[in-house]
Length: 96
Image 1 (cartoon, rainbow, N blue to C red):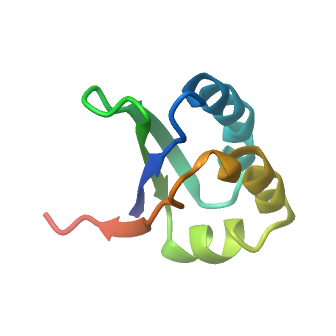
Image 2: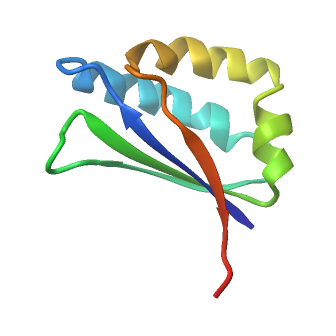
């Protein structure tokens, strides 16, 4: 299992619209092969920043299966215009 980690810097003032769009986008990612679970948290200190954690069976389930799917275009259309700058996404595996 791997965990995808992304800090999502949402354009200030667009947080409510982002959260609504994310609710619409969530079923897209949840339908992907290898998807386990997702959490989206909002920063208390920086309320325009969100923490996205997604658990996948394998790295390729995210990097190939999701990102190269037709559904990724819908995900991108719903969410990517909210970010400034575009988020850095990293993947982690449990070692302990």
